[in-house]
Amino acid sequence: MRRLRAFLLQLLVFLVILEAGLQAVVRLGLLDVSLPTYDARNAWSFWVDVDPAFGVWHLPHAEYRHAKACFDVPYRANAFGMRDAETSERHAGPRVAVLGDSFAEGWGIAAGRRAPDLLERGSGIEHLDFGTSGDFDPVQYWQLYRTLARRFDHDAVLVMVLPDNDFPPGGTVEDRPADARWTPRLTGTYPGYRVTYPPRTFAPRPHDWRRFLVNLPGEFWLTYRTGMFMTAYVSAVRAHKAGTPQDGALHRSHYYNYTRAEFDRLRYAIEQIARDAAGRRVLVVTIPRPDDFAAARGGKPPPLPEELRQVAQGAGIDYLDLLPAMQRDAGGRPQRWFLTCDGHWSEAGHAEVAKVIREGWGYYSSPARGGGSPQD
Image (cartoon, rainbow, N blue to C red):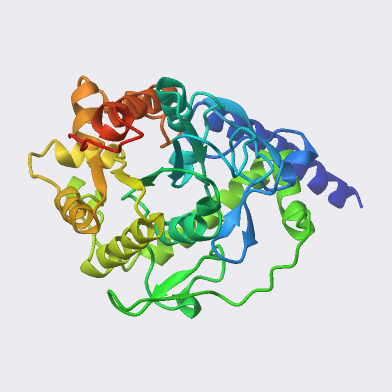
């Protein structure tokens, strides 16, 4: 018993020292892990696989506190599950539906300071933010638009594409990793794809107790949260180990580094959104990450914007690449557009994106008529 007590005491001391060390490392921004909130309510996930058409979404009126080294922000969903102000399906006058992932949702940014909010305030036109985190890709954008966003009165659609991780995965639903999120996939070849879904029964329930119990220790214990992060990281590395080489800026940037099959799936999702928009103005924008800025400085034009510009022209929609203007306005410091502890846009990044879109999309100069074209 004495040896057991000594061992348990040493283990406790070790865990306390480890916890304190991890707190320092994370708060200094050296490890990209969310901090504990010391509030059990945050163990209810804000991003839940609940929709049988597109998977991850927010439960109505869900609340969440997201804390990292450089931000501490509350999130709240409205009655429709959007991280947005309360709204209604019916609306007189122009309105924009915004589709996208964590950049559109505003990861790490307070409500009112995100690009859709700034576009709304600057134009006087309501913007419905249907963006969500959770490995959300353009096939899910399309399914969300088809089943949810299209129910709302709107005359324009803004589709925010992140080349870094927005090329929809291929293969069948059986090929997906065991720990992957529930997501639809495109099976087949362009343009004869079928949308396929992993097997799952979606039962209406307010909370997922299993996920709550998994998340709960992480809201009080950073060591546990770090362990979960490292497990997911190792899994992701193994899943991509057989992919494209990662040496050199061009290989890291998905403005340059993508396969024809990946592009065809992205193209198809965009074309389906344009088709379902049924005559409304549609703008597709591409979002650069730091590796994309680094690759573009090499002088070789990225092929992705030109290919997407041709897709947009064929679909009768607009296209705007954010990279040229953001690179020009960065003054040699594109890192200012990103959070210091995270790869998402900072408040300055959201403000810059809103400015570039407002100046580049003719919709804002004549929303009722829908005239004009984007300019790089």
